[in-house]
Length: 521
Image (cartoon, rainbow, N blue to C red; front, side, top):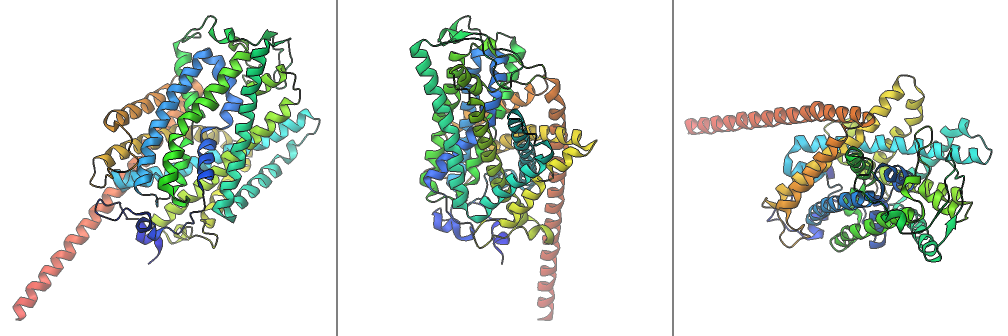
């Protein structure tokens, strides 16, 4: 029997052995990720391009109080990660935390979550690869090179390289993520150190034309008063403050990625708690620390949008004010690295989720993707996901289709909120189930924290209806939940009824056969 048939209906049991060896009997993946890899994968999942490019818009929206929003959202995401960590600790052989939705909420919600999450990963991957091409064209354009005609080739080469990294071995993927994360961390640390030195020295700077900004930034001085003077919780109104929550939430998107790596991690029950518990510290250092450093140097009111509504990177502004005029090239390199890290992780995760879908599918065609290569990676599923991501430049070029693609890619961020809610409900059900592992990696006060986090995610979804640019994606997300979610639940109910009727007929036939035997006697 194939591994998929053995494992797809497997459910943790309170009486079953909980040793890693027992749980790993059907795990065909190689445990090639070390503690170092998982720790930096957790960092990479928490730090995306949003911090480097989107922080200026966030600061402009609500001023220094954006730090409080980052802390509040970070705490909620950390609680969710504690829930995921407890589930994965219980059964580290699962290829994705989404499997627990099926285990504790049923096959209908499990199928909805698994397919939805895979589609979300592919759509985000399509937007990431497009962003990579645009970053390259924009940067080299500032140097006098017009590469716009070759953007498709840049995206193709980029994607092929990352798919290759994922196909070689999971250890190679882990090493790539380690170095990608190291580059991001180094830039943030250097920026924070630069801010501290400028603050101690009482540094002042003149009016500066920052690359990527269509107006001149005014002169200023580095002081803590840039943050504290005239501080208000909602300087631009409460609506702006509410909108900042959704922006910050999406900056944390994919923080759950570490919950997909556990089945390929050495000593997962030792490594997982360290990686999850370290998330909150990283949030405070790399998000809050970076934002405070930026606003110490640049008064928050100086973050003004360009005529097209875009904002330049705050990191570029900081280094330009410090006199490092090659800052644009440095930040471009790091943003490109952050995009590479994100796309690399998306390919890894999409490949594992398509592999899981193939294992659960009754379709002969889809089932062919549920195999692993000699390198013990789901190569076919990774390549298939990569091919779909590669459709991005084609879709974007088709008139009439590109608008729908933008809508659905934006809606994917809304759909992921449903996945988070279902995950927390699954965790709550797990804690009340016979499979609960009392000596596991327990999330404290789950009876209070699970409903609190669920309510928070509902609040975040509600904020999507405030602005016009997020309202339609929010409506599309609800449509997906009602249509596809309803389809999955109804199909599961139909299949369950069919299995029950089949069992009843079979039992009746057996009883009839038994009565016939008695008559013969």
